[in-house]
Image (cartoon, rainbow, N blue to C red; front, side, top):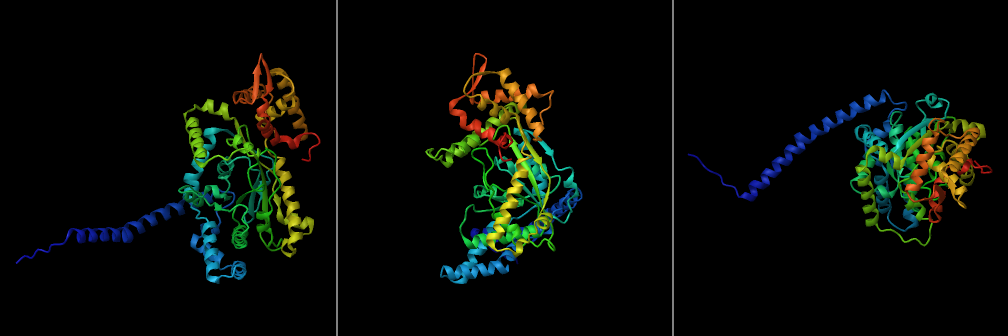
Length: 473
């Protein structure tokens, strides 16, 4: 005798959802994780055979393990106790704050996303907008760096494109870990950035506990040999000149550095320059204290409009409008050699003495960076036009002065890559670019800088101002 069991629709639906969930949790998701992990391991094995600096085990550590390592670090525990005592709160609440900071800072590096997606995207975007050039001024010393050394690329900061440009140019040598500001903490951008090994930093934070957690992460990453990229200036230049170095990150790396027993830290100076900085008007606008602050909607709308117009342009038109983006790599500076030469042990110095020594080292690195910042055509022509801002000049007069300046720069050993055969065309394109953007006026075959464009012309000219006679380069 057959019996029929009738279930309410709501119960049947509930059981169906539960069954689907179990299938996903016990069969499909583990299989997907195994498949993705296999792909990631294959990428790691492949790229480690061709990278000059291999991916470090620290970078492959699970995020939760990194967080635990930070939270239970002796110096962080001590900072938690001091913070709880100072703010009159239970230590559990202070520890929860430290956990929040550690979770925010710790990256989730994914080799597959970095080398298969991030590298491809950075390469496409960089070459979509600019003619990319790269140069080496290190006498092949990069090849001689010991594989166990901690390598830190120290760079000037002209544009947010710096992240993209250097990442894809260095991808054949190593995987870079960046310190990224709070501007990138928006979904889904922050997930992508963290998966590429970057870690978020709260700029100008005065929170002692936060600074301690950040310090311990940077110190642990450096001691583990993670290859890092640091903008010594701390932020984008607004007037085009190099800013004074910020000492925080350098201090985090070196305050516990023992030159005799720790792995060497190799600082590689990187100079970056553009014929056109995408944010140039926004940056120079900040020099005016009376300028009204732009809304987030205005920034988003302008950014989307820019990218849409750029994508619609033909390649030749894009390159004529944006010109060159150039990156030069300079001579490596060894922390081990520097400490031995100066007879310094950072770990044995008190705070004041240590910061004084770090400032000297940072100034030395800034000088090395300035020596490899590329001399690009637009910066050169901006300098010439400003020099003649009092009167109208013909194209021939401006180009003649530019050629003379090129000869002077070459005699000084400046990194300029403008060949004699292409000089005429390159200078014409640079002048056309300045005229087309309305920075230089053109009348009756003569040129003169527009009065309202003096600031932005100076912004470009200042990128090579350290090569002017009498400057402290």
